[in-house]
Length: 181
Length: 112
Image (cartoon, rainbow over all chains, first blue to last red; front, side, top):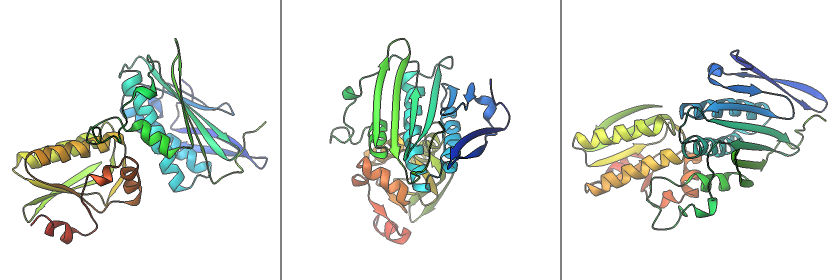
């Protein structure tokens, strides 16, 4: 396991200046792996629901350092939370032997996040419309709707023998955020 | 997520503080509603003023609570929605399901 200390460091380059992100993560020892080899920021968790909070806390700290506004942080954080919760609960069926991987790329003018599980995949077109009158009072099925509304682009791709890849992209108010070349 | 409950004019007022999200907050809300129903409460008012976030699981619990209360002939209503929670309840159109109030006195009056 990498970066098992209580503080996880990560760096980005803005205007040619390297910014070091120091993310307080007191529960970092629960991470299976975390790397920050640019341009990727990647972490992997075991499939239990407690880790959804952990991912959210780490990414929100990262988003803040990337210059996202609190409103953007809220929206992106909730979208990622939904993707990770789906991956843990439905993709990996809460099997703690299976990982959920979260990767984050700062883009020029936005960010992209990919959430990958080790499950059998699903067809998002087959998920019932939670806004249909007959589904409005159902207790579940709103995660994809939220992701689609909170982000500019959401893609679902199933890779046989690898799992489901959910990629979320959104523009942010920090258009100067660049990956180093 | 922490949660308190109190009674006023025969209405159980449940006040979650923190995140109503998968794994903990959603279950705490479910337990609080079930406890109020077991104690004989018919009408429930959920004050979301100090709720910081709700996800699809939290919304699922709100809907379950709404259905449980309605099936017992009572009413479940919401009080003091933070704008962020109002936004996501708008996306999911759940905002159309609940009666929502900004004032506790007004909310209590609606049960009379």
